[in-house]
Image 1 (cartoon, rainbow, N blue to C red):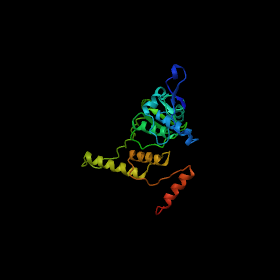
Image 2 (cartoon, rainbow, N blue to C red; image 1 turned 90 degrees about the vertical axis):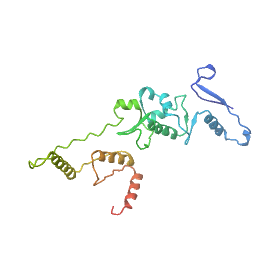
Image 3 (cartoon, rainbow, N blue to C red; image 1 turned 45 degrees about the vertical axis):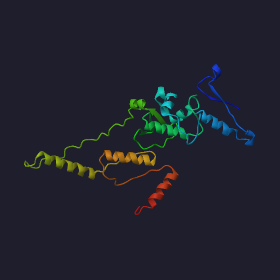
Image 4 (spheres, rainbow, N blue to C red; image 1 turned 60 degrees about the horizontal axis):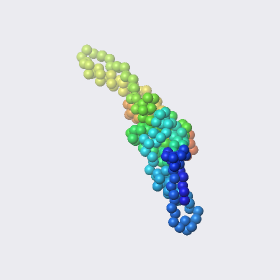
Length: 245
C-alpha cells in the first residue's frame, strides 16, 4: 500500500528526499498482476509521472531545476539525464513530454534549439528535436551571448555602379536605371551557387531563405545529397511521378 517516490521535501524531517503516499485499491484480488497500473495512476495524481500524450513540465520550471539556469546550455541528452537526477522534475516514461517541452520553450522564447549550424527560435517552423550529444538547448540569454540568436541580417555586397555616362543629355536617373539593368544582367549571366545541410525540409527552408536574401528569383538546378536509404527512396518515388523528371 505504501509508495515512495523522489521528492525535494525530506520525508519525516530526515535527509532522504522521498515523498510518500498510500495506494487504496478496492478488491485488488479481482485483478491480480495489475499492481503497476495503480502505481502509475497514483504517481500521475501526484504530478510525478509523464508518459506520451501528457502535458509536459513548464519550460521555465525545467530551466530553473537543471544546470540550464547557470550554464545556459545543455545537450538534449544531458537535459534528458537531468530528469533522472532532479527530484522536482517528473519521471519520464517516454521522451515525448521532454520534446514537447523544448518546442514549447522555443515558442515562449525560453529556449533556442541548435543542431550543427542549424538554429531554431521563435517564429521558425517546429524543429524535429533529437535527444543526443550533438543537439543543444540554449537559454535565450546564452544564445544572445554566443551571437547565434537573433539571427544576424544577411550582408549583401553592394554592386558596383555599372552605369556609365554615354552622353551629356543623360540625367542621374537614367544613369541609375542603366546601372540597375547592368546589375541584373550580371546576376543572370553568373548564377549563384547556394547550399544547405540538415533534414530535407529544414535544409530546403534555409536554402530558399538564402536565395531570397541574395535576390535570386529562380533556381536553375537543385542537387540533393541523401544519406539515408528511406529518405532516398521517398524522394525517388516523388520525382518518378513528376512528368519530364
